Amino acid sequence: MSEAAIPIPATTALPDGLAGVATDWASDQRAFKNVSWGKAMMWIFLLSDTFIFGCFLLSYMTARMSTRVPWPNPSEVFALTIGGTEIPLILIAIMTFVLISSSGTMAMAVNFGYRRDRRKTATLMAMTALLGATFVGMQAFEWTKLITEGVRPWANPWGAAQFGSSFFMITGFHGTHVTIGVIFLLIIARKVLRGDYDRGARGFFTSRRGHYECVEIMGLYWHFVDLVWVFIFAFFYLW
Image 1: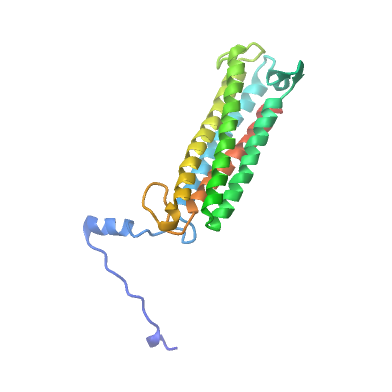
Image 2: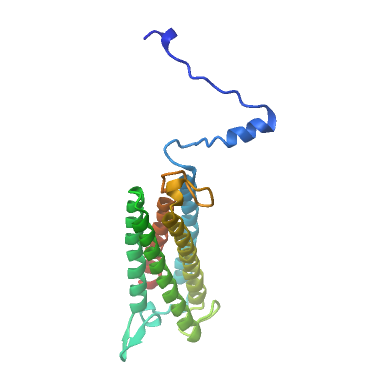
């Protein structure tokens, strides 16, 4: 084919001034052609959150290694007495199992979202939210137990005062993430069950028609929350 026969795509001139700017921004252009804005922004948010959690854990390790006062033994502090026997870290182990299991249900929800199976997707997201709420409930029990035993952000009865501030800051910040995730899981599950993503209903957290992208974006957030807990579990409870 000669150069003269190659069709040249037609370009539409933009209006001048602010009208042109508004038209350009409203045309849904993408910097990354194969990645939606929602997914790209979630990755950027997760990257920034990684730095925050990393700073928290580094601060915790610095405080623990620099203090001259004995650090409390997590196996004793987080032990529960069941049937007259003191079992170390039993509650933390159950919490970890529950949260890791929720990653499995979330992954299956994303899988069925790709298949556009509304009922299974919504059911698995609701199960994920239930597991997340169970985790938060057990964390609230853990907080109540330690507060009752005298742990405060400025002191604790077992040694280094930094233990209380590190515990409440790290677990509280993570628990807030889980709580927010549970709320959004329920919101998106409801929209999936109503068929908002199938008919392209306009509204908050509603993607293009026929796309369950919001389910995948929610999955990215939830897997990140689970991964962070693995590091918290390793550095705070096992060290």
